[in-house]
Amino acid sequence: MALRPLAPLGAAANAVSERVLQARAGFRSVDAPDGWAHTPTESLTVNADDGVSLHVEIDAPETTSRARRHVTGRMPTVVLVHGFALSMRSWVLQRRALIHEGFRVVSYDQRGHGRSGVSSLENCTVGQLGRDLATVLEATCPSGPVVLVGHSMGGMSVMAYVGQHPDVVRDRVLAVALVSTSPGGAEMTEFGLGPTVGRVVGSLGPGVLTRMSRHAGPIGLLRKLGRGVQDLAVQRWAFDSPVSTDLIDLVGDMIFSTSFDVMAAFLPDIDRLDLGDQLGALTGIETLVMNGAGDLITPPSHSEEIVRRVPGAEHVVVEDAGHIIQLEHPTVVTQQLLMLISRAQRAVAEGLPVSSKPRVRRTVQDISKKRRMAKARSTRGRRGGREAAS
Image (cartoon, rainbow, N blue to C red; front, side, top):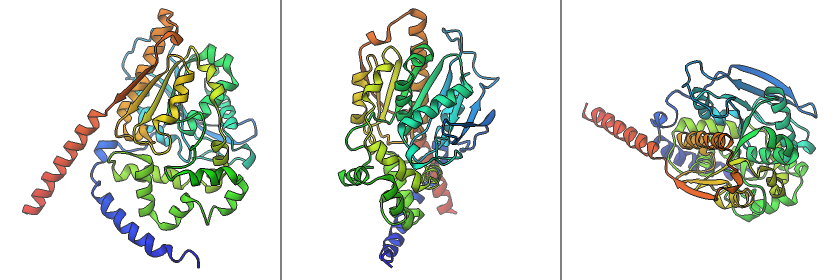
């Protein structure tokens, strides 16, 4: 009964959403002209230390990939770790690009996400995610150099892992990329909605949030209001530039197929998170920090502590970019990852101490996307003109 007043609001918002999203239809070629499906070379199940099954996929380098000369001799394996309420599908465009460049790639669904198993509430912690990453590494690349790439909560997983295994990091980790993430602190779970959400999440335990999950909370409310409202929320929280309806559908499917119980279980731990002391293990490791200038969840200010604590880290801020930057601006993200790996290889080959580098902060634009958008609008405009004339 209490939810009936939401129905008119949901209907009106869905109508507005339909008009807004229709205006963006036809831009699929801007985001992913080949779609979002990806077939891995190998799929396997890895059991975490508490028995939770983790779905893992391995991509072998393309046999037709460019003959890249790697100065370190042995090709690093690139390990991609996705963010909160997403899945490994969020890395699909980077996976394609990296294997084309000759890299072996490992991706997996974090516990409670995608096709991985559901965890007990007490093990829905970032510390456990760091241990899960260690398990995946042991199963898929027990030796040789690795590059660790984490987005959002995946970046927290990477930071937890490096703090738990500093010796392994020093011996085997060639480079680290921390994308749209934070080592913790205030405002971690506000979702661009202000401090009230963060205070509520921090004060209520996961069990309470789970019991409330069908009746309260911003994500639960969105689920009640319908798909149109959900799509508008995805656009607001995930992106800061026009994207196709297909991309909004992809991200919406990942978010709203994640159990609210899982979200509720992780949020209090994320809200209390403080990984600052773990970052010392990255000293001497080539490190890239990336943020979207328009990210409402983890704005660039949230990553400044990482850059401050990691000597020689590079901080790249992408204009017109939101939280899920690897899907919004995939070419820029992939380019930055390739540059990161090349810098790390060069430092190893030339014996250059990474920690002696000056800290660098750069702001970049996705010029190629602007051109693709202009071309798509022009093409659609000409098509509409022909239809009107006929």
